[in-house]
Amino acid sequence: MENTLRVHASNNRGQLVGVLNEDVTKTFEVEGEKFYEGKIEIERLSDNVDILPFTISEKLVRAYNLKLEKGEEFAFGGELRSYNRNIDGKSRLILSFFVKEVLNREHLFDENTNMLHLVGFICKEPNYRITPFNREICDVLLAVNRIMFNKSDYIPCILWGRNAKLIQNQKVGTKIDILGRIQSRVYKKEVSEGVFEEKTAYEVSVQKLQILDKEEVKNSDEIGA
Image (tube, rainbow, N blue to C red; front, top):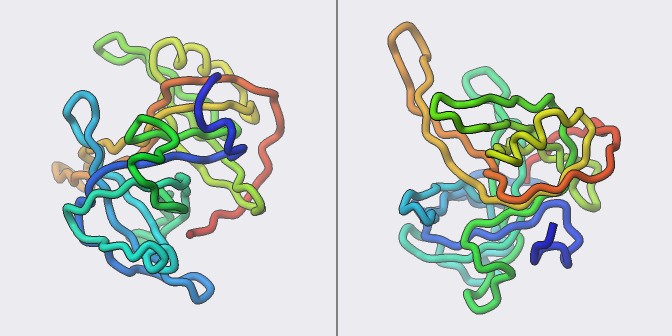
């Protein structure tokens, strides 16, 4: 699979270019380093929008003298990370784009405003199905090892058409290389009888797929930023 990210030799690299959907707030601290969380709004070619969560360190904010306010436009380079958060007494898998660099429009490493490259291992049996509109879809959970860390990020991915058919019979532990975009999807969940609550899911919509060598998935603990 050809893509512009291969030269960076990274398992997890992407870029988001869009407008802040809200003022960014300082939310947590890790080993003395403070982090901010916010959401960035990115238009699709279909004129729909994805509203995606991101995390950025106070150190980076100061280095670039950033004004993280609603309506400001930014181009972020970084990686999609997962971590566990306790919500209503239950552990939930949370995704956030971890910003590692602030890019200039003239120096983007890809023309797409929403793009992610991942190399990882299938860690759950693929879920293949055909929709009422006769579209082939397959959900895959990907374990992506962090370079230089004994940790993995667990990224839900969705594949369509030919790619869905290709991935459906792959086994847990199969290594794959994908290129796609991060998308937000709003749905309604029944929280009690007749009562529904609006939720947002985040996943990677896969555009290109390459199946690599098969290896065993190593168990890794989750960490935050």
